[in-house]
Image 1 (cartoon, helix red, strand yellow):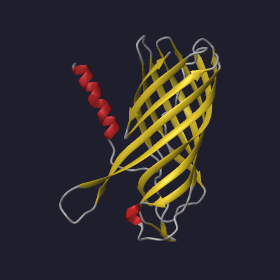
Image 2 (image 1 turned 90 degrees about the vertical axis):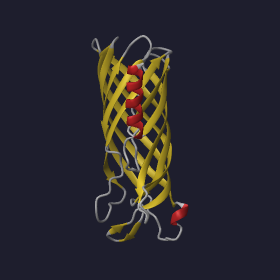
Image 3 (image 1 turned 45 degrees about the vertical axis):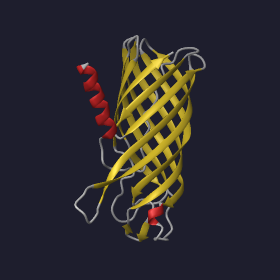
Image 4 (image 1 turned 180 degrees about the horizontal axis):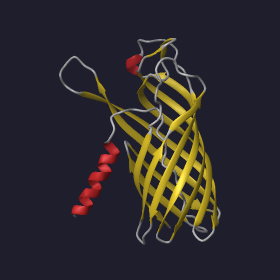
Length: 250
């Protein structure tokens, strides 16, 4: 019972830690346990976010993937009273992809996955709101974006587990940007932007007969954008990602 309580406390800490709101939250990469005519699923939680994903193998090489992920964070609101007020901000992403798996040597695995999806979110950010040539003011915005990615991975493992390196590139195009209702007093046009991001991840998988344990660590940063920002550099992506997942092959 004590071990279960400690694990629940760790999971809760990972989900609710973090008081910043970002515009881009990277998904956890899906590493399919490829077996002919089989499928699998995974639930992962981490810093301010959670994800449900799955895969289906068409044969011993080709497979399909699907992912639903969401992030939730709070930003402190400055008020005249002495109370601390925090406003919630959120994002939701759905994506799907197709991949190819190749085994080499005794324990080597190579996979490459490509896919895309759709995101929508409510953020507090200055990214889309230039008030003059050198100043960006933070406001509440509602956004929609399309996301495409290419995800190669290389790993080594066997019956008891494995370790994988996953250097992923993601293209995020914000197709709709609107002020939230509490920002209607400002009529300046907002910018719609697109980014190419690099998301290198590592994943360790511990296998057992009941369920696998997947441990993630990753970075994320923009490679370039459609327009450069003015003034101070604006961080748009969650820079560090940690996560713990449970996966099962059926």
